[in-house]
Amino acid sequence: MLECRPFYKPREFSVVYICALALSQLYKCIHKCLVAHPESTFIVAGDFNHANLKTVLHTFHRNVKCATRGNNILDQVYTNIAHAYRAQAYPYLGLSDHVSLLLDPYYTQKARSTRPVVRSVRTWPEDAIPRLQDCFDSTDWDVFRGQEALTRSSLD
Image (spheres, rainbow, N blue to C red):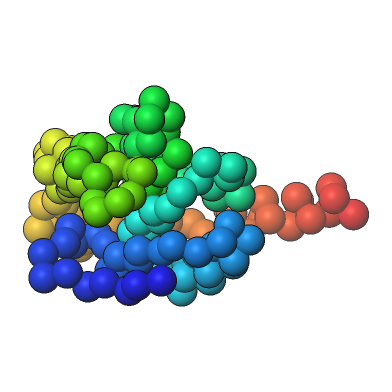
């Protein structure tokens, strides 16, 4: 497992993890890292021809939609962010029978994907605080104390 802190990354991610392990160990490692850094990004790549990472990590998303060996999608890249990357098939490396994959970032930052919210804030006029204090001073608080006593007696 690699812990990466690239020079440029979206501000909302503290760290990027890249993993390649057995499925049984993978869940334990990722869960431990997600607890420590819940805002982190995960990239899990591997030959998943007999395993589905989504069976143990339900929030992870598949990124490879092109064939990686013959007509089959055997190699997969999972991320914990939907639509984070687009995978493109590239030529074989050496004597490998699997194609190489290039992941193009496709992620749109939250700051760019949401519109700014315009809110209006209503402020009190300057004379509001003294007027409110005058209201509190002239309020007959015994009316409320008498109501409280009636409420307690009806509950008993």
